[in-house]
Image (cartoon, rainbow, N blue to C red; front, side, top):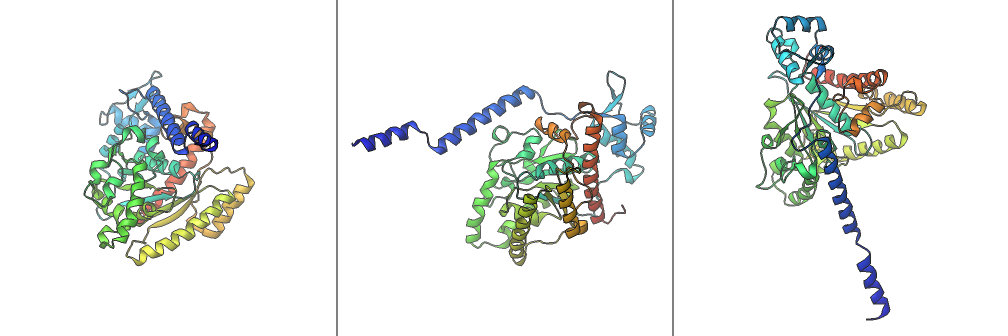
Length: 404
């Protein structure tokens, strides 16, 4: 063997392949994440939602604090826990029980949909990372659950950030066929969606978690299309068909779509009755959104001609990570509103240290108490979230034909 060949072999054995290098880094990071989670959430512990102060509970139910005290004194509602300062604390489960007690005499206290009102499926989407898509989806799902809607969150993103926010680590907590892929796959291993849905620590909010397994749908679908199977096998009907099996169990479904325009996203858009496109008000993000809209329209045209559902109740752009004091951002928001009018939500999600800090500990702002931040910071962030999510709630009620 000549010296050049010997040198090449020696170098090949000394330098690992890129595949092995990435694989090793992935294993290293996964192990570290598992250790961090073990410290934050020991094996015997589960992620839990905080208790709510009486004022917060009353606001969520839609009554005054004084009326809540009266109900408590009459012994008609669950007894509140008291903290060291003697203040009453209610769990979300208790808040739902109080709401149910009140709605027995007055239906207005329960927001649940009637038989003639369709399951509201909302797809939250954008194919550019950093647009606040998952943050928006998580807070929106929790907002609806806090107000008494039976809510299902579905993580369709193989990166599974939504699942992580709910305390699920995809590499360790999910086995095969435990994502939405299990319910929409084309072969005999397909499962009922009800068998995949998991309860969360948020009473009234269930989740279908995600992981890399979801990518299999992108690989399977071209093969199925080439086989020219009947319409029941078409990719754009899969998610809608699966959701129909749990229709009566929920009022609202939130779909956190992948940051790409593949078969999974198109199937989600065909299943949705409403769409929320998140947009960070920077020119590069707006330019990429233009490409996203062009591509979506082109692909949707093909799907619609093949019999896919293109009807919707509402389509809105949600401005996220917005800094009102930033002049260029304000100009971009003004441009979007001048172009799209009411299709841009009036209220935006402001960029806030409170939201970012909550995310570091895999929590949303709805999970973190006001006492963890300066009041002004927390109040500003929670007001923007409630305003934006409340606007979407109003659109849902309008779609159901309710007086708002």
